[in-house]
Image (cartoon, rainbow, N blue to C red; front, side, top):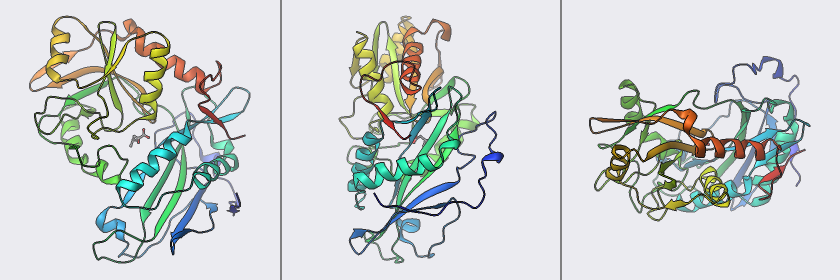
Length: 352
Ligand code: COI
């Protein structure tokens, strides 16, 4: 694919502090831009990372036609760089685009644009195990028009950011029984920007109470758990792993979620995708059967949950050194990503 590349005059790589890779704080030298105008994708360009200008009437600012993805690239000990399952994110990106009445991004633009961007900024991919290059493809409506209608013009961009752990300690989770993230028929299954904007106030309130994140529940009964907003959720009841199913369209179909399910099933561990009520979680907790709970997502990877708070009651999870399943899955995923074991699923996409 022909991408016009303008390189930085001087790389900022010396400013990168690899000892303190806080999520989303530092950005690599270059970014990819491609505009959709007059019904077609124009020439993609890779240019130095920097500000973009736009009309104050730009449609996405007013009406929220904006969506994104989260993907990671990993550097192996031998220096090879691979991206984890990017094609799955491309498919999900376009699923979000269809729901938001936005243009779909061609596979070659998404995949090859990303590959060339990362090849160019390959020295920004950290080589310490546990760290990676977080890739953020995103798209927004660019019509300079404040009438309410779907945009005709869009901008697709990719920026990248070296990243360490998203959560640096086990998470304390507040099970939400007032606000709602998603209803059936809504956009809960997409990575539309508005999904995240609507969660800011509830998350702020939760943080003030000392919790890290919200576990969302269904809006009709506040009983069935959905997802954590930055990650999907898994519980271990006895020897069985359970996670909410995707049938209502209120939960993001996480690529990490799918990988966890597949790897556990291959290991012979029973996994159930189904409705899970908070009553069932409490019952398992009381019977000593709630063995582990963890979030799974691109940014968060596998994030253990130390505590769940619901309606005045606290459930404290057992000590984490006894957690066989989440420790197994975390290691298995890391080994595939850093090339320590064979990638039998062909999940890794080679950059260079
Ligand atoms: C991701 O895991 O990539 C996410 O989208 C979660 C969050 C950083 C928004």
